[in-house]
Structure formats: C-alpha cells, structure tokens
Amino acid sequence: MHDSHDYHIDIPGTTVFDGKMAMKGYNLNKMCFGFNKAVNREAFKADPEGWMDKHKLTEAQKQAIRDNNILGMIEEGGNIYYLAKLAGIFKLSVQDVGGMQTGRTTEEFKQFLLSQA
Image (cartoon, rainbow, N blue to C red; front, side, top):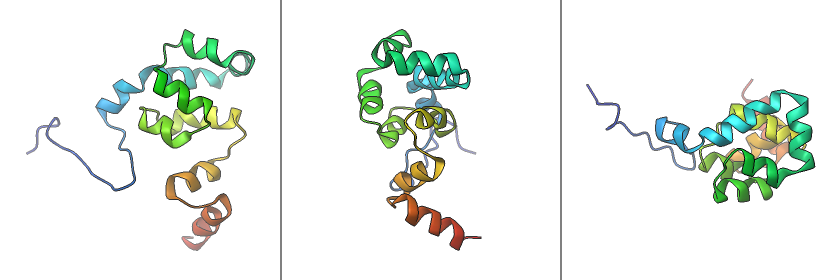
C-alpha cells in the first residue's frame, strides 16, 4: 500500500491535478468558479488586473491569463473544469483547449475526437 504522499503519476506532456496543484491553484480556481455568475465575468472583463489582484493570484498565474495561455494556467494549478469559464471569456471552446492540451489545432482535435467515436 502506498502512502498518498509517495504516489506520483508521470504522464509526459501532462500536468496532473493532485493535492499539491489544488493548493497551488486554489485562488485561481476560486476566481474561475466565480465566473459562473455573469456579474463576475463582466467585472473581470472591465478590470482584469484588479480582479486578479482581488483574488490574490500569483504573478505566474496572472501572466498566463494575460497571455491567454490555458496550458500555463494548468501548470499554475488551474483545474480545467474551472478554467473552462475563463476560456469562454477569451472566446475559446473546449475543443480549442483540447487541441492546446494535445498539441493539435482545433480542427485536428475535432477530427481526432470523431475518429475515436
């Protein structure tokens, strides 16, 4: 039996969302969860820097958001389920993000999904 602190999964090219990453990304994910409310999405769009400061994001998290870098946000502890709302603000679809995660264009990712059906 493994102690949960000794267990590590290494999937090349993938950031595993574990307890350590959950702690690292807590404020980022909390902010993104708030985007379930339109008023919060509008407040972010009106003043992204102020909104990120209000939620105490790290500089690396802020820079990933400034760059529309979903993979960077994941590396900084972002959970894709929460980041989906932020991706929507950036006009990115789930397929766009899937393509980013797999190194494909959005169209290549859509074709990949169809080939798996």
